[in-house]
Image (cartoon, rainbow, N blue to C red):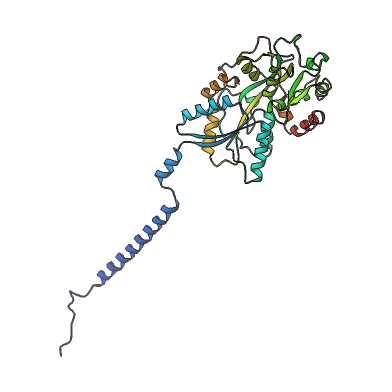
Length: 354
């Protein structure tokens, strides 16, 4: 019986076996790499999807107490610069926005990405609560630095003035004249708990020499009546319920242009100037969209829209509604009033009720 002998040419050599083992190891490594890539692709966005996300139209939610015509114009301008952009707007009085923010915080957190307010005192109160981001964008050249804080950017200037019914004689000349017995029971004032501009006026009078909280005591003693909002003051004067009121110049100008029998009185020592701040919230998850909106509101295009809807823009070189020659606005030291908002309201409400 012959033994079976394998020819040497059919047996794998030592070198062949090594190559075979190396090939198997390489295939195993490739399989691991493919599996890892497949796993990553399911959880990590591709470069293409990341690029698409970064160029998607901005979408944001805006809480604001700014007048409807101004908001509509500015949002339309933003959408023209950012085609496809979406801006969900909650517009209400300052008091209603305060309530909305408080409700948000009780039910999961602030929903707004941007808050555009009427006055610095209300907006600074949000910052003190940690609701606003510090320095989300670089300030545009020309923005008045005296109105900036870490979180707030000025967007427009507002003037608190006296509204008078047409034909009233004599007209008041100064703020103090509103306490004159000749106007007993004929003066309407807005609620500073509801209207941001009224809160700013309260801050000014409370700290201005010759006025103080006693000014509101004198108004009360002279029969002044609190109504809810700044537009309501103008409406009540136009309809003859009152002869005079404290309101904003733009509200009177708009009503007069529509045929209401009202006029602006620019009282001495001057109309009260306040600034309308805007800010990004700390709660936003849409940072790029919120920042883009701030950039736009502070752009020349948006500032022209703000001027065209009745307000003084903050960018130099853009004209707002004219102010009579010789009229010099007055203003409070706003930073010195930060933190005093609640105390001011309590003192006021002790006189006029909540």
